[in-house]
Amino acid sequence: MKTLYLVRHAKSSWKYSDLDDFERPLNKRGHKNAPFMGKVLKKLKATPDLVISSPANRAAMTARIIAAAINYPLKDIRYSATLYELSKNTLTRIVKQIDDSVNKAMIVGHNPTINGLANYIGDQPVGNIPTCGVFCVVLDISSWEKISEHCGRLKFFEFPKKHTS
Image (cartoon, rainbow, N blue to C red; front, side):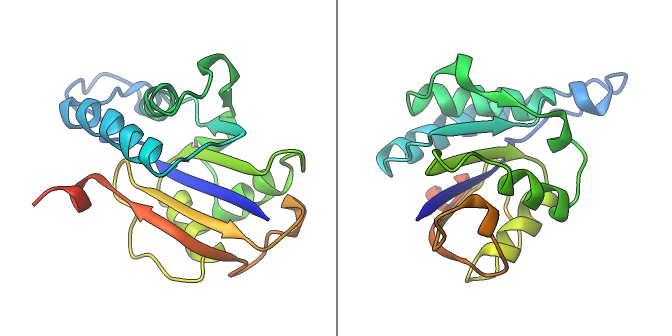
């Protein structure tokens, strides 16, 4: 059994129009939601063995904030440039390359790719993973290489607005 946490980066800022998309930081809501979702994940006992993040500023910041909240060592976060601009198929190939000694992996990235992978591997379709949303599936596989369509069973789907009235 493997567990995969798919995290969409927190809300980013468009305040600085001269910044390249890759460099956009989190906005005020993103800085509020990322630690909040870290607390939610800690309560859910999310304990990834591996965290891989897009190096884009907004995703890397989200990964670091959540990792700190769940006591995952910041120095162990892996950054993959491939996660910045890729397709669901490329992301699937990245997941298939995870070492099988890893039982729980977290990927922090961008839509539509995160959403596409969630719908591909999950047993329940998800319309949209909102910013700072976390889609967690338990995969009925012994090796990451065996990831395939609908091989996962939804464990939880959490996002900030789910916890506000």
